Amino acid sequence: MESNLSIAEVARRTGLTAHTLRYYERIGLIAAVSRAPGGQRRYAAADMEWLAFLLRLRETGMPIQGMQAFAGLRSQGDASIGERRAMLESHLAEVRSKVEALQQSIQALAQKIEHYRGIEARRPSSSGIAPASTKRKKHAAPNPSDDDQPADRRALRARPRETAADRR
Image (cartoon, rainbow, N blue to C red; front, side, top):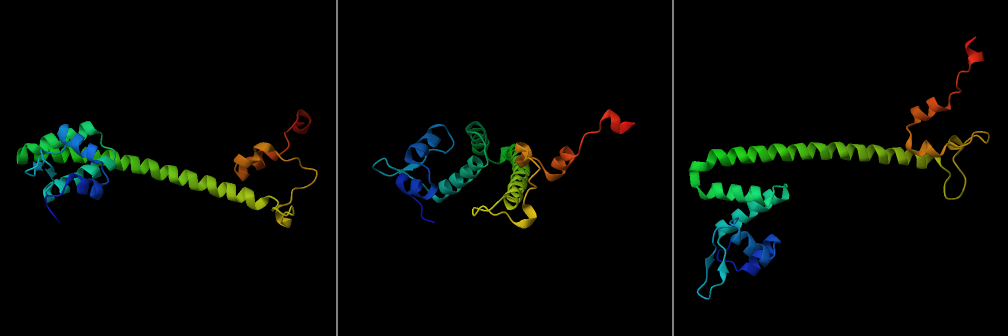
């Protein structure tokens, strides 16, 4: 990889704006970047590797304050390796928890989509003719809340209620 990249080139490669790169330097996420004789920033390969890691932290939801704390520990060198590892382990546990919650949400959404597909399959087609197996009986009034109820709940609700006379 090239070293001594301009801020414009780093912005293009990382997707960050030049403003964000300067901000990251100002708040200590990026160590002071070397400068060309004219004062323009020049990013080295090590700067790019660090930026790639910061982007991973950001992508996984680490707040700026957490990234700053990690950068501060990093600047201390090997003396802070244990603290950095512990910080990353904690963040990884949070990310895994979020992924698990998202997986559960994905499953719930997929089930609801399948539920609606089943309802659509039982409804008349756009031609107005329903498949023979899905036509409703003329004497049964549709329940408007059936759309959001699983079939077993609709079946329970469709059973006639027992009256006092039935219990005798």
